[in-house]
Length: 188
Image 1 (spheres, helix red, strand yellow):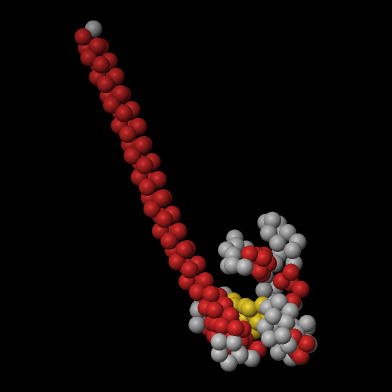
Image 2 (cartoon, one colour; image 1 turned 90 degrees about the vertical axis):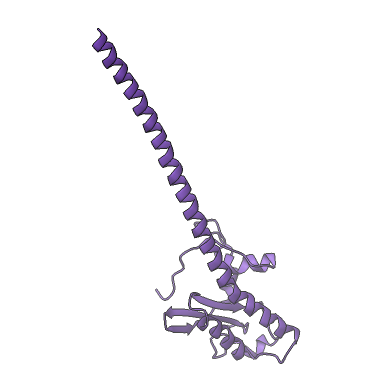
């Protein structure tokens, strides 16, 4: 009877210790995993934030230069010079996939009528100035023609955003907008 009692006590004690160690280990592993996930998420968040801030410098700089140009702070840039400025912003920032500048009708130089159906890709069929440069590959960029109607597409897409949210949001809010990433097919 004494042997059975000792065996039972030992077994019960070992089982209780084992359960406590198991629960403690499980909690410790869970806490460590959550801490690692939180640390990783913070690091990724800082990386994404840094990327967005770096990428935002490109349009902010272009906007500043073009605003000074429209105020007449210095000799006005021709439409071709604006296109080259936008191209060079793309060339100088290899992590940026495209650069563009779109103006409302007659908003750039008030001379849209002179540029209707022109040969330059940055002059649209209505004559408005719409510059769009695209990175084709690491070492190749190309200028693209724009359809001025595309920047006003307000139908909702499958994600609930307007088709031209990229243009309409900053135009409507008079400030930069950050959008959810989405796929946009270019050249098939």
